[in-house]
Length: 628
Ligand code: SF4
Image (cartoon, rainbow, N blue to C red; front, side):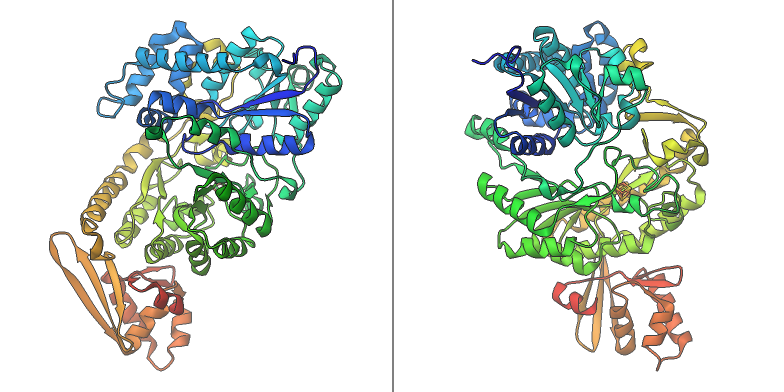
């Protein structure tokens, strides 16, 4: 066995601790491992997707219930990190778990001791003596679990150089970590590939960390003390030199499970880093959507070429014999997406794709994506009020949101999108607009209501006063998890604020209730899967029939003929009144306006700012393509 304490750096370990989704390998680990192996072929890189081991040992259902709620997830390892605070942390767990949730009967003490036994046994199984460096990737829900692993490992193996990185440590968050967790030797600022490569190269020549010169993108306690701020970023100029991620260890672990515990994982894939919308948001000094802090670890927007993306997906789905792929990008590349999905379609594989898209994605592009295998999307809807979307600097409108929600219904794509309430500075008019537009959205899959939360580094956080916020600070729940003296020195990714929170909660109650009613109606009307869309359209060439299904009542039907039919089909895509009038010049404009008003009154069309959108979902998508 080699001993890294004397042999420079021939082996390193990359670790992802609980609580990411257990059904996917860690993209961060897979990408870093592949890059480091390509740069330093004789370096042994072990990737430990440990959360998978824990999920299997705890039971997938329990793991999932914990992992989908940030505060619940963070309580478990906080109790292991600070056992003397068990009762305070337990209070937060009990409050978050609630009596009615699947976790209602879980005893916190039993849970934490099981997690401790599984985690410690895992750490004991790995030959840490052979490793010189342990790198931890930290995203949402992974802070306390990572710190627990780090503390335990450093106690037993002081030679290990501990490096942390990831979205939870971007920007301000890394500033004071060294003061409270001296076990951490270095924090990567921004993306990890180049800084880690430089660090490994240094350690191979000179195993002593004290000789480390300042490296761009890497912050150590020494550089933090001297410079008082995080190191500058050091990122790949473009993503074309990134090899396909290496997920081998995740699948090796999965193969050791009892067949009853086996499942078909989803492969995370990366097409781009950053957000082009944020880049192009010249009007907003803080850039991008006001609530978003997703891109703190990147500068600019970079994307892979279509051939690279397609060959990676082809290679990895073939290698691991799975067809589910989740694209993890915050936003897909504007000018390459269509080409990428066209080429993916040509692979002739029955892929099941998931990705996040902007509401402005054109219908034709969505169709290409569906043809390539897109089955679920998260659309950046956030609001059904254009007035509020402007305040959020979302770059979309309510009519665009309705249009893409309809397009998903037409194409059979499941949309799992959110409507955000409690946004600071939103007012009664914003809420009223949301309630009104929701009346028109009822035929489509309901949105999930999510309350605004303040993200460290987001435009709202940086320009708090603009949004009526008088103070920002770490979220009070962190005070349950960390001792006071530590919390004073930490800036954590979930923040809280003083402002109009109480007012917002009251203001948005009708919206929350209406979404619950929407979900109920949608569920009831889709109990019979053969019943078709709630608001459907059948074309008879010179007439069309619109059917409006209702709960426990006979459906309404409407027949449109001649020009009425033609106008309705023309507005399958939202059109301005001017465009409609110039297309149908033989009909007097007041008749057209009266027709459009009638359609809106019957909730068969939506109107906003002189634009009109037909809402009925064509039962034959092939016809819809011709009308778009
Ligand atoms: S929410 Fe999406 S589109 Fe908006 S800034 Fe963030 S990543 Fe970009």
